[in-house]
Image (cartoon, rainbow, N blue to C red; front, top):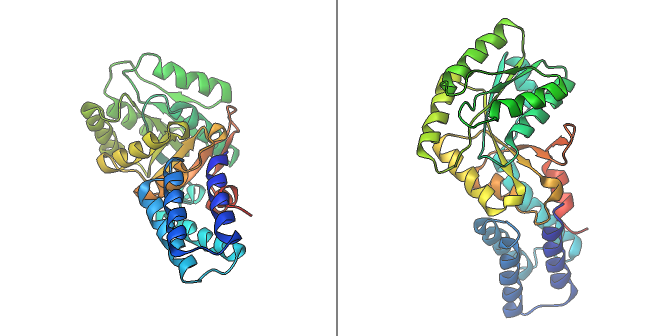
Length: 294
């Protein structure tokens, strides 16, 4: 994973630290770096900021060798993630019961599977989760979540198709409270992220449920579109945290960095495979180790 972004950054560091550059040649390499970053799903604002700071550091001899250049780069990138903040999911969940999470995301990104993975993960941490099928319009949506629930042994709250999703979600909270569930994970519709009716539906669910977290699920393999989805959902509904699915098959590498920078919200999990256990908390330090040269 992230192989191409690491290659881009490694190539840049190799060139910059191998020979002395004229200012003109340095600027050429900086421009090429920006182009290569953007082609690997790094948003232009990040590419521009990073390249500009690196050019200044090299030109003014703020970095004197390869090790210092890589460390300088690491600090810049880590700063983007620090600005996005962090969330201690387990601590929040233990202090707010039932802990309510509304999941957002367009169809096809792996949202329902991701919800099951997170429920499975949280049960392993000692919680008692309830999954809620609040997509009452897409045919098979509730059955899809129930299949996951049966496989991992976690209950699923459902209603009739065509019912008001916000009402179903509200009822699930009372159900969870009365039966001792710690966490309620609410699946929602994701027909199109430009669908005005869907946006209003999601806003209503958020108003009614008053979730502790609004979590957006994106598919890393959709590249720049996943970043645009993050911006859209954050502006129209509000996003507190992000899960990036299908990272195991993702080579470009820029999506986690770009989303954290674009909406200033933390990434809490990444999906790294098909099994329910193939979910891991996102660690910016580990991510940087994978994309930066040694």
